[in-house]
Length: 64
Image (cartoon, rainbow, N blue to C red; front, top):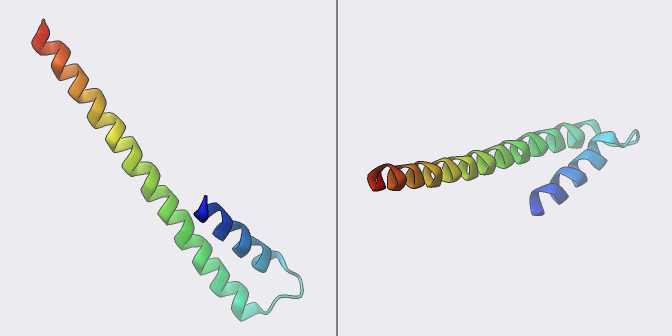
């Protein structure tokens, strides 16, 4: 997954004891944005799943 690779690269920069502090702070910012993007994707998938479940329930309800 592309976001996973981004997170790993940022983590490596942040964890480098010889890293440049300014770059590490920027890597933290990128990592936070990547985490937010992942969360947004999960929420979208969950909403789609819930919508499908509700649609199926409505179909079954009409069939009764």
